[in-house]
Amino acid sequence: MKPIDSVLFVCMGNICRSPSAEAVFRFKARQKDLNVRIDSAGTIAHHQGQAPDKRSVAAGIKRGFDFSNMQARQVNQADFVNFDLILAADKQNLADLSERCPEQYQAKLALILDFDEQSEVQEVPDPYYGTGDGFELVLDLLEVSCDSLIQRILSTKK
Image 1: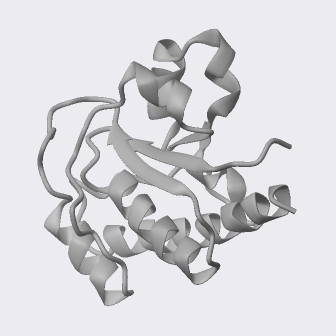
Image 2: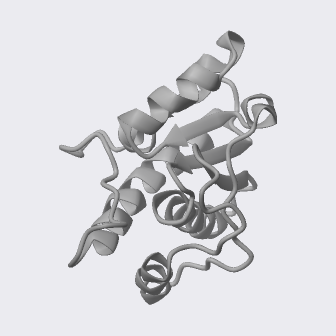
């Protein structure tokens, strides 16, 4: 397996799930002294330039995650070239990415939860319109998957 030096996390608007994934992964990578370029983006530009959702930030800060300097942006064609791994929050976003991704980069696309072999769910649910603990559930899922992803990346660097 080729070493993974960069990861892009993607959801629809880049204000809930993908910035949460970026924050979780950045925190966990730092703990393992793993030098990986990390970013997040959305498949749509509706929230472009906005900070992450306040509910995502509040849930993440309680766990020690940092959302500083994050602004929503849309995936662009250069992302398919510049990132080693592009991870979508759900199947619809993965399909949207797959439609836009040049054939030679399709192997870079996957679901975020593909790295959590114990998970009974395949998709990170969108908490944006929900109530209750949806943002906490997102973080629970992301933490386990990011731990597994980091182990996979570390194994490629040996």
